Image 1 (cartoon, rainbow, N blue to C red):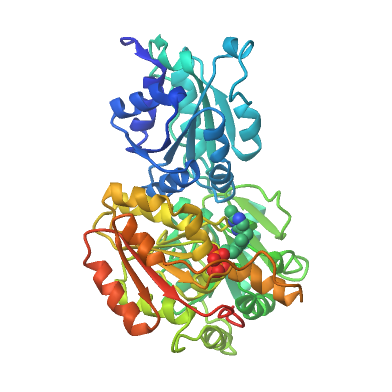
Image 2 (cartoon, protein in one colour):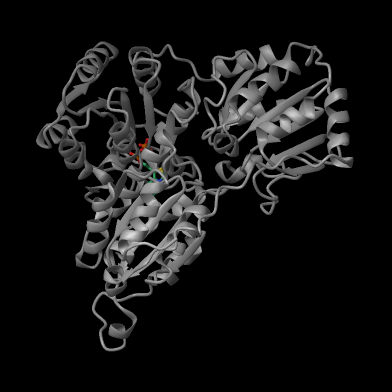
Length: 540
Ligand SMILES: Cc1ncc(C[n+]2csc(CCOP(=O)(O)OP(=O)(O)O)c2C)c(N)n1
């Protein structure tokens, strides 16, 4: 198909629009102005963030809630390197992200050095692919970038766009489009038959559900399989809610909590069949390294990619769609009662006891109060730190992608921008960002973006004037207190300074009132929940 000529930047923008994108985030410099112009012309709204890193998390928030991958725009030199953290996050957290950067033309670079660095060399180790746009190849590069970013496991793809190439006009090659691949299912044969036999024999099966299942939309298949074969399941933090967590077979989430691991790992080690379903161990801490002996127990691994991590091993590995594979495994096999000693009920009771909700005040009381007051359909985001470990264990979700966080890279500074992205595409849904005080200080400038977007995000800050998680580790190692405590600031006033509401709360009743006000507010709200230093001790 031929057509009239377009700028190369327009071809990229049109492909991204065709793929469903309606928002791009970033901070422009002169080198990306043509790109911004092309995105807007294609129907993709460009939103100015106050830091490229936050821009990338806003893009992720949009993707998590709409399925349309995000776009990060960064300008030459400082703009690109400011985005490194969120691009690495997209790679480790399996987030599809198109990174558009502006660069100086190859010929100019021969006699010009200001701000010039090799963007591709910086970003290659943390992207699935890095392209340098050519005018004639613009359409194909855009299509390849979309395909590579979105195919499992998803991740970031970089397109470096030389200034003059963006402007060059070319005829599009619209026929060079690659449709997404059909889901893979296990081929009939020895492995499938053996796996079915193991399922048929299992008396103590357990399932570990991970993030590939989100991409596969496998929630219903998992729920049916677990019910049919009485399989208790635990999830990683990212997979929380893939089956509503109130399900009687749900053992909650595993990830960063030693307390939870101390209960979950021994249970998993008692199993006679372990089903790893879309389980990507990048989310897990060291307790989950070689947690079982595959010679001693039947382990079936169903994942989007071959096991190159060697964090655990399985007797049978399927690289396939998780939901379809469970269907193939279970076909024609009769279910049976499992775990005859009441181990599942015992474990659930022990887990509930490990994370009590009854304290008068403190971080667990903040989480418990928020969970009770905020509507069930609330989307929550969470930053990195002590508060997240507790929250990821305590915050029950009833749908997938409703607790957003950085679980692979585990970076600070993600909760507020993730929430802004999520709220942008679902303005009617309550969105709450939980963050430590240091994490909020990293991205406080985005409260300005919250105001500009008219966002009604609720930001709950755990204020203890401390890097609680690191302070705890320092103390546990009997080291001198150094570099982990900082000033107590008036976060409510900071919220008000940016045009939102601000509340400081010191007990459950004040928090309830502040949440009620926030739910009815026309602006964003910052709720500063003041807790004691050291109040996470023994909590997770
Ligand atoms: C960008 C980044 N820098 C440093 C760290 C290491 N780190 C992990 S948790 C943490 C403390 C966070 O403090 P705060 O936001 O106050 O949360 P809290 O631990 O008090 O809940 C730090 C510094 C990180 N994960 N990410």
